[in-house]
Figure 1 (cartoon, helix red, strand yellow):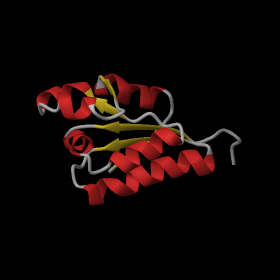
Figure 2 (cartoon, helix red, strand yellow):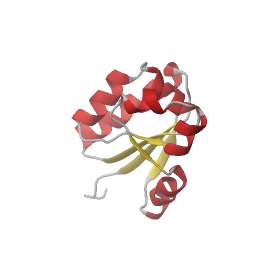
Figure 3 (cartoon, rainbow, N blue to C red):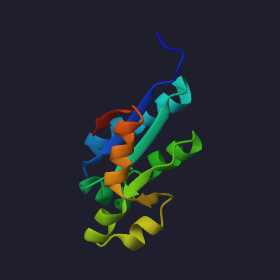
Length: 112
């Protein structure tokens, strides 16, 4: 077993809270309890979930444990959710470049 912390990236693709919640909870727990390097991206329909307010508590928990949740800038614009996303502590970025960095930096990617 390696002494290096695990590197896990979570892609939240679903706008269904019941499908996304396990990934959001797992992300915060891996960081807090295991010291893993965790990244999290709301992408595609997952951006609608982030904008809805349904997972605000989980977003707050992620930030408290040191994970900065992100969202795809293009999807935010595509779905017309700029105002809703601006009200939440999410960094907007280019999803393609972010996902490419997951691969080049050796992250295991899990999608929910």
